[in-house]
Length: 374
Image 1: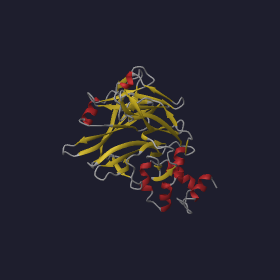
Image 2: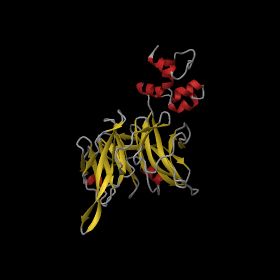
Image 3: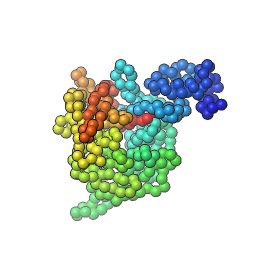
Image 4: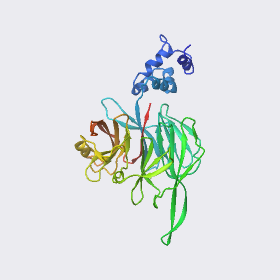
């Protein structure tokens, strides 16, 4: 009996398709687009177990057949509930964010980071894994030390998640007054061993009186952070050197909040003067670029938006979430999918592939959006 057939014996005592071996059925189903799985799960109880099994997604990964799925955490301003939603993509229909009811309410103090097919959620001390193949929750060990104002970032090459925040504060005397001084701490979660590294690294770094970060991303194996202090400085943290570095004037010149990274290039929607999608490649010396080909479509869709969050949506693609006031006066949340193409000479061109109203509930506010690979 093959290994795959043995795996299927755990799912069902009877064959999925009587005329075919179960391992052949597995390979067939693994090649079917995941958007068809809800319909396949209605065929029989055996198929329903197969669609919910991690074995199917492991086989898809082995075959190199994966898809990017987008999730969002939304807050209901009336109830204060934080909930997970998934972006449902349908042929010839508008995309929609749909509530994942099998996942429990989220913490208002949670920080979220995707890794592979999972989303890791870190609260004040507790931590959880959301398995996006089965929409189930699994607890992991608590954060070793309480950390405030934290951000979390995954470096997939290292298979580690870096939690950066304030582990403590102390009072200092300065200029004839007393002030709170902050020091940063970094702790690391190993996704292979599912455990925290034993040492919490406390880092000396002057960040002014404000400990907050407005955004953080990973590029080329390093964590880039945008500060919320009076100078709005950008910093980079190198995990190998365990060292902070203040970024240069060029990167500090833009308030890159709501940013994402696609192919080690940082993108964010700049609405400060005219609406443009900007790009920054730390390996180049040319500074910020404007993504060409999007000017008219971005202005038309994002006019009067107060904020915009970008998220990587696979290779050469990103999604923009932004609020919009419709003609009937209702406030909605939209999602625009943008394809990216890098030309010789460094120019970047974009194409808006779709733009849909994904949430019509005026009480819903976007907290975080992440992309997983399934």
